[in-house]
Image 1 (cartoon, rainbow, N blue to C red):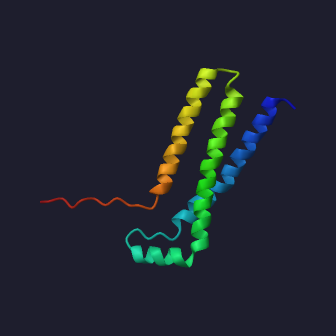
Image 2 (image 1 turned 90 degrees about the vertical axis):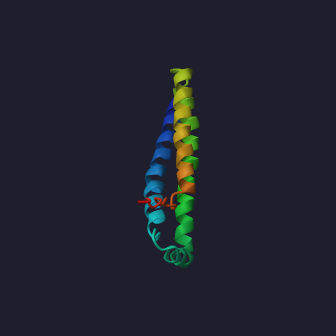
Image 3 (image 1 turned 180 degrees about the vertical axis):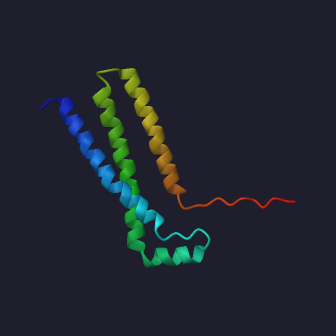
Amino acid sequence: MTTATRLARSIGALYLSLAVLGPVAYLVSKEGFVFDDAAATASWISANELIVRLGHLAEFGIIAVEIVLIVLLYRLMKPVSKDWSLIAALARFGMVDRKSTRLNSSHVRTSRMPSSA
């Protein structure tokens, strides 16, 4: 088996892991958060601590898999064009950075300032 075939199969397996981690992270992280009631959210988190931890672990797993995918996709595409592979890797890394920033503030709702009439 050639190196490109091994890389492609590894990339495919990682994409399958994203197909499993993605719905888990999405469904678990959105379930018990009540945006208008901080006390209800806090009590739900304390009652379902394992679920919340699993959701955050799944989101962290997504970010880790994405970083590994960046490296593997760069290595796979580098023989075609090193410059374009690097540009694609940097663009994808920017997407991962945005995901990790969203992870830190995914449950924060910004409120609008009341307008003065």
